[in-house]
Length: 148
Length: 297
Image (tube, rainbow over all chains, first blue to last red; front, side, top):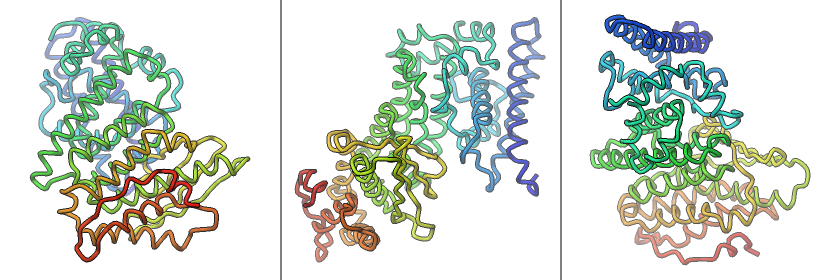
């Protein structure tokens, strides 16, 4: 990968898309009859995707903050929504799959994340929040309202 | 669960949080967590980017919660910086981030401008030694010059003028940046090694906004804190500060044209004259009226 810097952004977009897809799959599984062990495995798989994202962003000659495309912004935003949804970020009930490695990786990803809100985005609240395909309505209702 | 977490972060906004839909709660938690992580690593300026979108700013309950979150992030960041300054372990990015905040404090969108100005003001008030930084002092003077040119362009240029300003750079080893003022789309793009990453847009200020607006008060406060602050004086001798100003003035002397006033250079001259070179201390700066600087003739 180090020898092909022109593939950095393509690989990043794909891996962020994979992260979002896995996040949606976990939400779907959580609303179905999935066992705790299966859920734990799925969460660990999702957590482990943070490491390649961090490794990719660690390249000195790659800075997604510089002139990011709207697609990259959207994918980064979706990644962060999923991280918050599953408590990967610093919160009182942090997910058990987040080891010190993952926490360090997430901090470095935060550093290289471009602004997740675009000034020119039209109707951001409706399009990118209320009808965002990576946030499942039924799962959100379940986790946002129940007591910790 | 997420709603209760958000309520713990900003308890005063509990009634506003009740009115939010779950996706908005996730969005607010994302702002909080992401910006907390960023600010702990020395990236403080990105908080302003959330206040640029018209759709978000129009939702009262959401934007009120965002204000509180920004406030909480600012407080947390200042506490951490206060601890780190004692250990002489400030993040290396803090200088460029302060400049980004300064640029954001001139943004055409009032909310972003207010948040950036408030953040910058608090950081300088809380940690005055942050002003012991030549790039930041030069950036303040540059921004003033730029705003003055924007004001002049409002009256003198009728159709789509483009001004190219070559300004002195902060990092002497890098290239001199070019700042382009484009009036047709009412934006001003700044491209320099520091600012290019943000692709920042400026509003073309009218003279009224510059003279009466909070921006002027902020800039004057920053400049005064350079010359008055006891901590700055201890860390930065008068000779050194005088050198910053003289370096800035030396560059501008070569490009000053008739009928063009360099507001940054005028202020630098005014402040530099007050520095007593033999004693290495800084004298009191008279509270000169703004119009004396804006209208030297």
